[in-house]
Image (cartoon, rainbow, N blue to C red; front, side, top):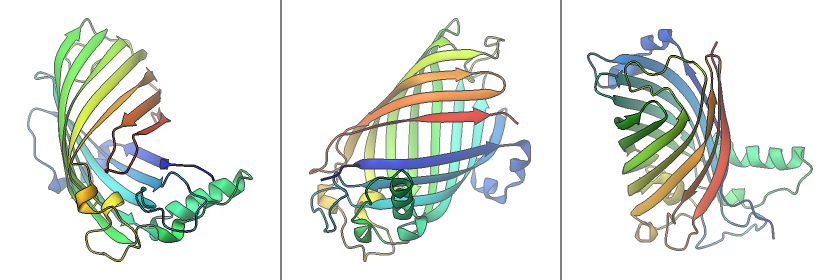
Length: 273
């Protein structure tokens, strides 16, 4: 019996540049005044599996195999005088076999001389992804740029996720808050962070299947979805004028009644070009 459970792999490539302001998708975002705006694109890929991936048969009561590949247009607007940030994004993509989640996991296992995962024939079927996300963040407390506390909220609506969350986060260390005027001048930053969110779930296509294609061999039924979930993150960030490195860990409560709490972690690396 081999395990590679729940969130099994993911990649996220982001690119911000002033000429991204010409992206026609930006017309979908809220117009703001008195803000410093950034525009970007991201390519995101994620894959999920049940607890055991050595079975050919469907594991009823466990998470279905699922993956998604999306292109995300983004706008970030900062009101430094108010300590507020508005984040908007629009996602276009595909879920199912065409997003190559199964092919990617099988390739990784074979390339590393590991056993071949089974069960991807039972994955959630192809469907289109169209999602609009908007979130707001507010700086509530800043102590000499060593400690900051934020409140935040986000709404996602579309064929991938429909939900609402509320949360709070904090940073501790040598940090330059992006939401504070006259923050510390040094470009070098190193700090710890933590974040907790509560999520009110409307629809999760990676559990319940696509909105338009209802022919998936196995999904989690609507009645088994937990409508209220909680998640927390913590980690370390090292940042200079040229690079960004982040290590994080996250845990999430059960997303459906027969599921298990989930834990995973990862690295983020950024380079200024």
